[in-house]
Image (cartoon, rainbow, N blue to C red; front, side, top):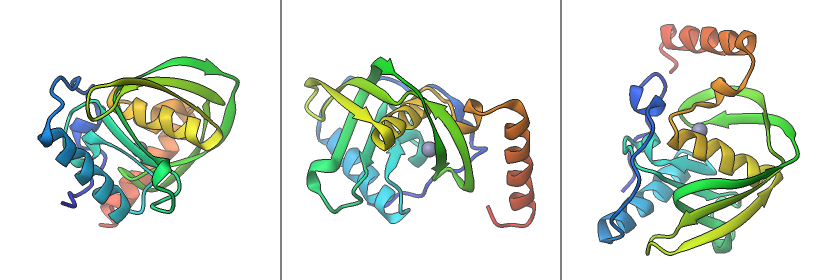
Length: 169
Ligand code: ZN
């Protein structure tokens, strides 16, 4: 089921999520809904709060349906290793049309559970590392405008208010 994407300033986006403790059919359904909603919104990453569910779950597919091997589900993820730096443009389905360069680690290792509750580790670099950091930030209630300078953040927030006033948000 496709669920609507929650946009800023909905407070659910800035609240830390709850850990997943039950690995059942309901969770599998939610993960399926997250992929469907993400593809429908033309995204390559989605965190559960973005469809209104305050749980520690994110899905990523950098190939956008091209390669089933690229479908990643992270439940209760934590970044356990960071290395290097990258400074690239990011966007977010919850902040439509807003893009800004964000400094992130160039390489990360994430520890997470799969839909069956099994723990695994996954490495990512470049775009994948950025997706891991952006999505895991969502699970901590951190939107990407918190990762830019105060000056840039003010400009972004001003732009958002303008879009909201114009009814384009
Ligand atoms: Zn986002």
